Image (cartoon, rainbow, N blue to C red; front, side, top):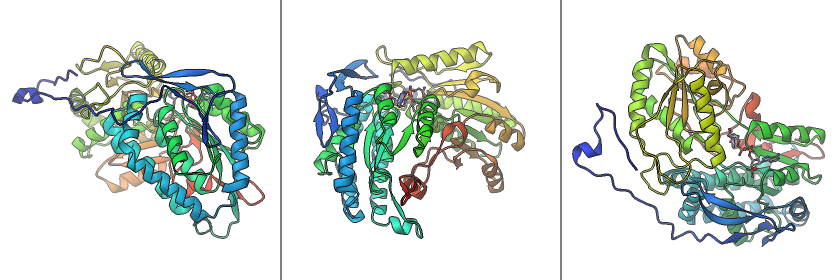
Length: 496
Ligand code: NDP
């Protein structure tokens, strides 16, 4: 990959050092020609015989063929989960459920490299992220929830709680394995059984997880994984024997699911979109803040619901800060996601690439100035360079809509009150970041920001003990921590 620098920054090339790629081997990964649906502990065909391809977005080459679950298949999966709930899982002591979760966690650790490479191949994210973030966190979620499985009565003292039964879970394409872990681990720890649907463009690590689930001898039907597109998801949502739904994805689909759940008074958690403000005050440690902003928006190509996609920078330092930011962006390596030096990988799908492009064009049409670094992009595959839009007004689409790509939108402010006003001026409320040396200002802002997760002098820190979730159109309910656990339990004889 080409990688040039702005005039006053030194590059490796200036010192006569050539950049050498470090490509992760794919030999550990054995991708099958075709994958079945994971129902009742076995990989099975669809009743309709339909299937679809999953691609490597960095090459556009097909990786495998995946079975498309029809509503009959979803029905089979729900019935299996229902039987398994009554027959095994509901009766099993928490300490025994914990053993299974610990086993899954350990298998994930043992096969971490294989999972990481597969995640990168199917989704396009840099190997250093799937290796250092997705995999350790996915294992950590199973470990954490395994610890709770036999202690639920201490987690919620004075309350008589029980599992919901069969849970329908629908996850997106940006963190395929991690989202599966976020959803499965607490559901299983609390004694529920599950039907889970991964996203159409990234089903492979969920299917590898299905193999792990089979290898640890989880009773058949406790976890069922059905692949397919929106219709398959919709069949889960509408199924009368599903007792609770958990969804992560777009606000648009989240609203459809909410409508359906409300009609049946079904418990629901929704983790939806975001347009997080990343607020930089003039007294902040600016070099660290630049790194925080880079991580906040370019991590996972910006395909992150809590991405710090709106930079709010104090006017007195705006020119300096944007200049530092642009110089740092020139140094980012965009390209082969399997290269351990890559900072920004491939955009997950052509549809997402077109959406990013369309929104950036809309921003330029509305008067924004665009900065893109001078890096070249690979010929094949779906790529978008790290991009900064300045001169953005609050009314512009790029300031209001989730772009879900490597695009940072910049606005300025003069006072903390103005920063707060602009930060909260969004239908979303998932996350926010604050950079300042003043502890009192951090507290003042954090109390007033309408966001479920607030980071101070850092960004994108995740931990299974810490609840994650949003306000307003970013959804409701929490995942992680005791709050996340509580969503998978209900009062005995009633709803949660
Ligand atoms: P979706 O909300 O469509 O996808 C999320 C999941 O829901 C996928 O598994 C999807 O299946 C499934 N799904 C789609 N339609 C239905 C339905 N009617 N009933 C039940 N399940 C359904 O997101 P997209 O992939 O279309 O992305 C569009 C935009 O959403 C992005 O540009 C981004 O802005 C935002 N987004 C936000 C995410 C977040 O984490 N907050 C994650 C993903 C997207 P399938 O993929 O197979 O169609």
